Image (tube, rainbow, N blue to C red; front, side, top):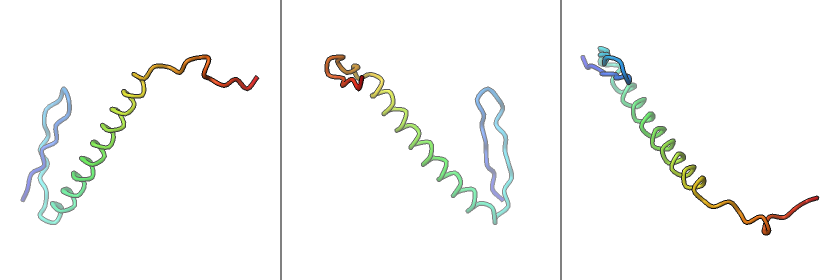
Length: 65
């Protein structure tokens, strides 16, 4: 038997007992979660970089009027 510990911010950690046949599935799910979390972090960093860029000069912006 294996135990999965799940922590939530501001809450107590929950421990969930896993059957032997569940362990591989849970490990795959945790690996997928870590990949998703890393991808979201990369997107967040890119968005911060884009927000720091100076806005384009008004004279260089083409007007369609």
